[in-house]
Length: 302
Image 1 (spheres, helix red, strand yellow):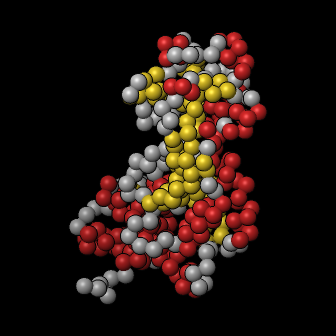
Image 2 (cartoon, rainbow, N blue to C red; image 1 turned 180 degrees about the horizontal axis):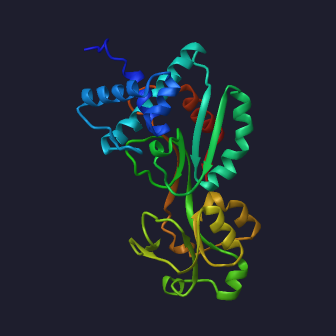
Image 3 (cartoon, one colour; image 1 turned 30 degrees about the vertical axis):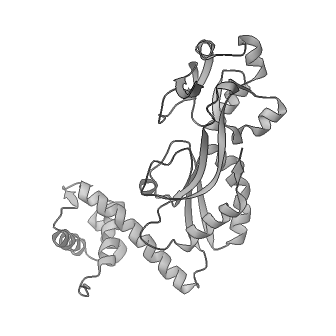
């Protein structure tokens, strides 16, 4: 039944600000309430939920696990309420702030050139664009959209596919001149390779072996924080790298990098997706506008 005697949105907003400001007094000042009034509001909220949300001491407040979960969900609900009000007031025109996280390569090569056009189309919107290859938690990072390359692991996310690309092992002509071109997996083990500073889903590189696939890799001599760094190291002759071909098309055409062991390439492909939190209700106009914009302008096939 509806709870007409309880303003749950106001409770969430006050609780969220207590957490963000670190205390009852600062939140009370912002809402023009007394610290005791804010404390009682949070206590009533805890009593109604039958859960302790904050551990209190004389010097600080600390979220309990239940409080952290409630805080994360409250932020989403409050953001959706704000979006609903803005859309109703503006005829659902896209407006507001958007946070986008992207794989470094896709971000630099595809997203950055499109930002001026997007902001010109939607002058009431602002944009944060963060580039990093490690997979982030959208809710924890408060990101609206993330661009991911490779298999999708989080079934709680919605996804819009932007393209697909083969994966290839490459080296510079200078490296191959010094160390030779590997012709077998046994030879590959004697070569130098470029790895990653972050943890991957699987170790080693897949290669075709008869009817199946085996994992093998060269000796790692350098590690990269993202695909662009790995590409630059490979071009510089540091060692072999295994990267999505969409990232290397121009380098291969120009002869800066040479594919190797292609006869053993298993033909695996990496899909590129825009992922977002979208289950359980309509998308905010600002998120939908950016997804549609990307789908119209990005189609990767390499």
